Image 1 (cartoon, rainbow, N blue to C red):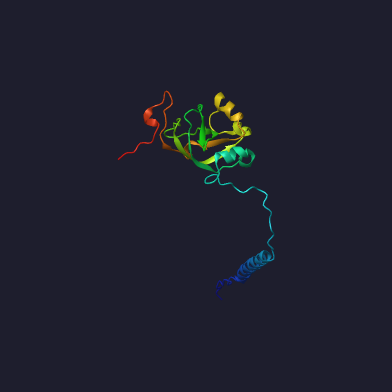
Image 2 (tube, rainbow, N blue to C red):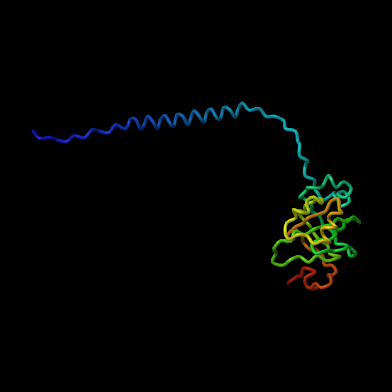
Length: 190
């Protein structure tokens, strides 16, 4: 008699059972996970952090200087201000004025294609300014502050730190000695 090789049919039932058990386990996990979310009751959370203070309309430099502790740490200063014509200017610092009140400002000296030339008498729009106190001086980004800038900042209860890219020159002022007159005001090209 001739031998005929007979192959046993592979029984893949165990694979389908395993796949079904995995799907069943995932469905149970998903259903249990959803149930837990339904039983979580909302809890009232007390506000422990101060709300951001809008420093644009309504808040002036006078408000900030009147209660510096309330404003130190804010990163939302924005205003249109002038640079007083009689104020001292340093390598990275200058004074801004609003309604007769002055606030010292330090520029974060970052790499820009063309650096800003802040001059007395200019009108500036500053956005995203950071109000800080003297404890922040070692953390000011960029090159270390020159002695004049550091001394003025240390004497202030609060000062402004602004990135060059967040300062827009709206109106020209008087150029500082040694600066190019063409760099003191934006020019219109038509």
